[in-house]
Amino acid sequence: MKIPAECHMANIYNWEKLPIGQENRMDIFRPLGIKPAPALVLQYAQCGERRHIERVFLRRMAGRYGWIAIGAENTAAALDFIAANSQDLAMDFAAYPPRAISLGDIPAESPEHRISEPWFSKNFDALADSIMPHKPAPGLTLHLAGDSTMSNKEDAVFAERGWGQALRGMMAPGVGLANFAVNGRSTKSFRMLGHWDHLLEAARPGDIAIIQFGHNDANRSRPDRYVSPAEYGQRISRFIDELVEIGAKPIIATPICRRRFENGELVPTHGDYPAAAKAVADAKNVPLIDMERLTANMLSNYGEVDSAALFLPDNTHLNARGAIEHANLAVRAINELNLGVTLFC
Image (cartoon, rainbow, N blue to C red):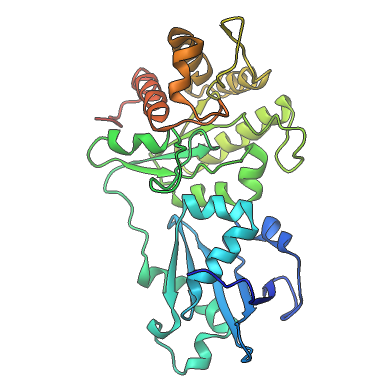
């Protein structure tokens, strides 16, 4: 359901941080939209002479890999509006599809209780458990932290695929896969926007986590993403320490290659970032899969022309075939680490 163009949008606010009813610009999504604790409320005026305010409570479900959106009949329209006005949330919705819940389906002492901020804030966790409980896999889980080259995309919507998404059909029986990778993320923004918190909340002792960044860390035009190679290494080191602290087992992965050829030869594009990742692995005695080297060898073997069959036209993002072939490289590399567990079929 789309919101007709003649509708007037009233405001968007976060009741835990902003005065109720205060109008705010759309960029409120960037600092607040992906955090697990705050909830967004969308209000907009419906079409026609009757001015009806629709409230949609939107909150990220920590540890449940999704969002809850609670409203009335126009909840889906509100989600369309949010995604259309926030690139970050649109990508997050693709990775973690929202679950829209009707106010009429929620038990309450009286209808007005269901549409009040205090009621929603107080009852959110219980509500989330009742409609979409987090059920851990019976065995261990492989968690993924990374960017668009690793993340999930909706099969029916995006031609783009991430190699982490292609692992779905490769997991051994009893092994779960939790892909927290999101398009456009760096070691900086992955933590800043709350994705790392979600991973830590879901991970359990004995679980394994692969960390792969580098594509967006080098983007100087985006200060919310950019970090120097030295800071990149420090941020990966912190990820490692926090995983070890909860009893999980980290694996560092260098970023996959872009498809860039000059005079028939593949050209490296990641600068000093892969070396920084390797230095952390050596210093922390953590397993490493050198995806840059593995994918460089694969693309060189394919050659400049044939390697195009693995990528979208931007030569950075993978199509379905490319995601599968990159995933196969990762699986072989992980199997060679001799982790003592069987992760893949």
